[in-house]
Image (cartoon, rainbow, N blue to C red; front, top):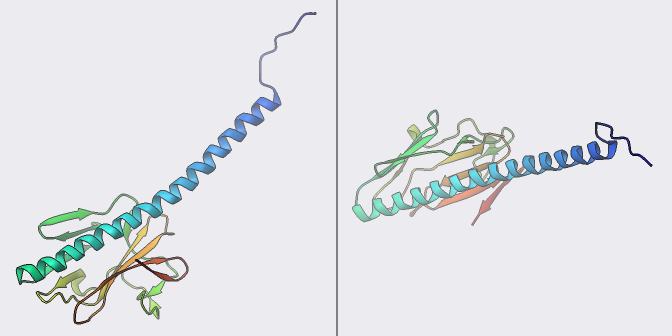
Length: 168
C-alpha cells in the first residue's frame, strides 16, 4: 500500500488552529478590559494617597498645601512633584454618570469640580468641597475622589457601575 503525500491542511487542522486563535483573542480582550479597570483604580488609590499626605502635610507645617490638576495634560501636582496619569487613564466620568457621587443629582459637566482645578488643604485639615473623576480610555471604568466640607475633611473614593459605590 502506498501513501500519497498531498500538500495542504485537513479541515480539522484548520478548525483547531482557528479555535486556538479565537480563544487567545477572547482572552486578550478580557485581559485588556481588566487591565483598564486596574489601571484606573491604581491611579485613584495613588491620588488618594497623595491627597491624604498633602492634608497631613498642611496640618504638620501649619500652612496651606495645594494639589493642582491639569486635565488637558493629564497631570496633577503636589508638594513639589508632578504626577502623570497612566496611559489609558484620563480625567473624566462615564457619560451616563450623575454627580456628585455622594448624592448624584445632576449631569457631570467637568472632570474636576474644585475651584480653579485646585484642591487646597488648610492648616486645620479642611479642604474645599469638590470631586475629581477618573476614567479609562475605554469609557467603561469610572472612579471618583471626593472631599466634602466638614470640621475635618474626609476624602472618599467611589466606583461607578451604573451607580456610585463607596469604596473602603
